[in-house]
Image (tube, rainbow, N blue to C red; front, side, top):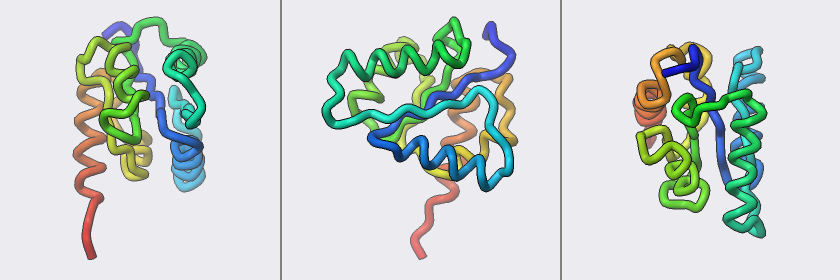
Length: 132
């Protein structure tokens, strides 16, 4: 990995990701570094979604797709498929985003690369799901 810190791009339909990121940062009383969120709207075509993803990564200052982890809301969605294509299907896309995943970003080791960080977030997110 060429970057010392894995960048994270949250990609969701509507404002869900941005709102969750805002809530997580408020809860943590800190800004999560190298994390941004983009919203996809129903009228966005594939090119628009692709441009939003490219712009988000560029604004984080990341030059290598290998240094990005995408957190996406829906498996199989256009955003998920486009993100997978960006990183050549190397496991840098986590679907099923939830709040515990975002909170975990405050303490997770982000120097181990996107695949490792993604695995950590999946474990955290999965452990947080309960029926009561």
